[in-house]
Amino acid sequence: MDTRSQDASNPLSFRVSRGQGASFVVTEAHGRIGGVFGDLSSAMRFARLEAVNRGRPLDLRFDESLALIRAAG
Image (cartoon, rainbow, N blue to C red; front, side):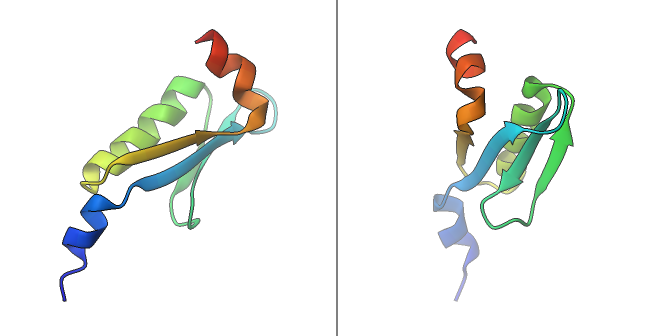
């Protein structure tokens, strides 16, 4: 059974939250992929490129602590 075609239709889910100081943390829903970034645009770029490289749509969620940043941007 080929699971690759099934994975292509399932979004790769990431959560973006604030880290310590001015950092942003990106975590994949299953905890297999992630990173700490100095700015929000780099964090979002990482998530987007990870999804593109795996041929999957992106599901990007923001922590409540980023609500004001997201609304302003």
